[in-house]
Image 1 (cartoon, rainbow, N blue to C red):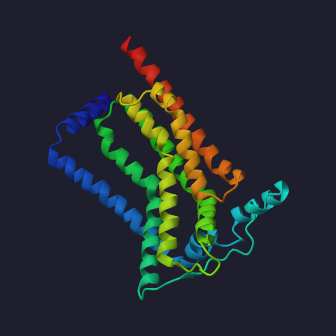
Image 2: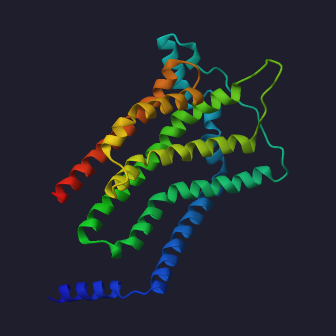
Image 3: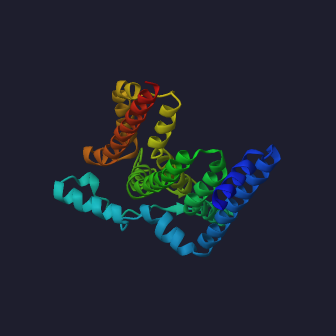
Length: 278
């Protein structure tokens, strides 16, 4: 009885919260998220050699695990384009404060990536009072899936798309007389933007879920435009990979699988909505 009474009092308290109360609550969640980012950014800053020598600059060398595996695959399939021999980009810094600012920037990016699950948790804690009991139950699973998809996209990009992109763009020459000297800021920008972009793209099933839920998207629309999406994915894969079929397949197949998964998600939600309307 006391438990029921306490639960009712809590619900009443949540309903009578004013705009300023909600704003104050939001401020607390934002501050906690910022603290998490700063703490993990400091950890990344103090581990400079690991962050830069092994993680950030790793894809630019022929010893990187993906480059070695692609080389072995190329030897097995007799496709020389897959094998990267003695790749070592000449990365230079042309600004006095360039390396220090880059160190700070990458530390913050690393802090955000590693604290991403906690940030999602804080967002869920903020919106939870406005949810019904069943919505809270399913939204917890949504947080886990969103985190998983984002980190999966980050790993997929870092271990496959980034090495292919760095190898292609970093070694591409319009003439043998033109030597590539890559600026540190350009290299960092490419690695970070490609990694984050793919991490966000992997959130497609979650986006499709909500768009279908509110009636903006239907599975029929996604199926109808499937061929156009496939063409876009193929063009993207052709741009960022070496000019051979196997590299393009390695990139485009997971993206197609992600799109098909999104169609399945949309189809399931759409059928559920139709059943509720009937």
